[in-house]
Length: 234
Ligand SMILES: Nc1nc2c(ncn2[C@@H]2O[C@H](COP(=O)(O)OP(=O)(O)OP(=O)(O)O)[C@@H](O)[C@H]2O)c(=O)[nH]1
Ligand SMILES: [Mg+2]
Image (cartoon, rainbow, N blue to C red; front, side):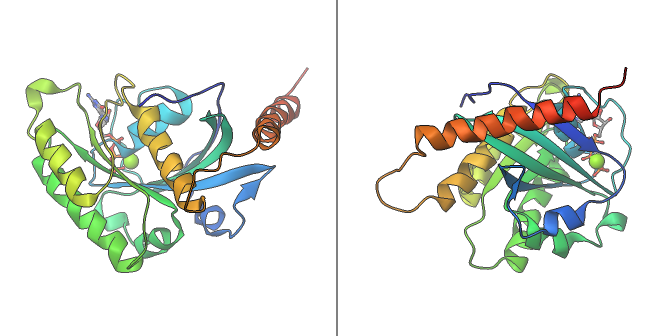
């Protein structure tokens, strides 16, 4: 699946949790639709590395267990500008106290496992159950990600097993590599596409008008210019 990216920009806020931002009922900011994405999965599978590759095109080559980090990333997906509000969650059980809260706030969920770690693969289903527990009977945009696909010699979970689980979960599946930046954008864009599809009225597909799409791209450029001028220092 290829994505139509004109340009993107990131605003990362590291360290502190930004659950308040996620909890805001507003779904637009500066004229851009905000998509609240939650990244889930066992400790060490690469949730932070995948997220950082997406927002800053860099690879995190050490493991610093996350408590909770949030990031914002603008992108133009299928000709429409979007602002992705991404919550990188804790995989380590000692940091998972906020789980129910972010399960309630997320619009789309990325469930990650590592292809080198069978236990993390088994846990993926448990994450799906956790979402269902908090959001019973809801149609939840979801993507399954088998990360570290560059570590072929350490592989413990086959591609077929990943596909079968995705089929069971009824969601798209990507084998990604945060190290090589493989299928990172595709996994995030797939969530935005699912959220959009869910919002669109049923029946014949109605695309946004040309004017609406132009307006959203102008909002995207304007925000970027505004940020540049804010950051200007002589
Ligand atoms: N080779 C390879 N290493 C990866 C990849 N993704 C992550 N890693 C490494 O795996 C380790 C853990 O990555 P993190 O992104 O910190 O894992 P996490 O899921 O955020 O872990 P927690 O925050 O503890 O839940 C780090 O040493 C990363 O460099 C990948 O795609 N390929
Ligand atoms: Mg992390």
